[in-house]
Image (cartoon, rainbow, N blue to C red; front, side, top):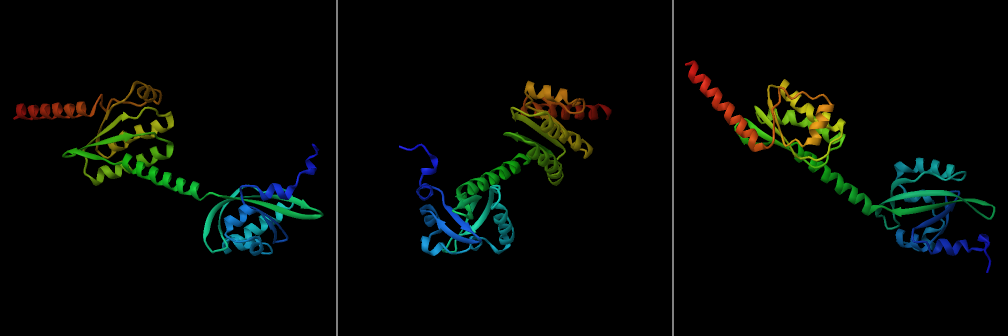
Length: 262
């Protein structure tokens, strides 16, 4: 038994590889493995001799050609592309290529990885995040001129920024006079994200809309203190029910004062 790696049958190695592999030189495909036949839905005879550029969209060919020429000297970075199979169908793939010497001929070996499922999952996740962001800025009316903004789930900087942009606009559209901002479904916030969210009450105040903050946990209160948030003009109570009670008490007190003045 030989331990010399040069005795390994290279052709056998790539033939049994699970991912599609293409070997090409001077823009001519000289070999594909069995996985590539299955992936491109064509036989070796149909693929060998073709140009590797033929699988790309016209808009991508110039950049791919340049990438191939550079790959004769050093491995290229992994990229994502949409390519054509031999039957005309398209598929999203990840491509990686590197130089390989076949005898005295400089060639390139290209790995093709189908990322259709990953892209579909990414798209679904993006749509879900978009829906969550939309829900997070949804204002729920509960009384005339009074609404609740329930903050839900995890927040990153982008989501907090969108919230700061959308909420004042939605408040004006719905003619809200008092907004209860409920933090009870929020467990963790970093200081940057918290700063965006706490700014909402400041922006609303400039628009003549009153804010009441509910559901603040001790750790979130600490973050607010560290940020120097001033709650003098923004009441904080434990629950939405307590906020409504506060509004009711104040309304009754105002009515009593008006009666006494008469």
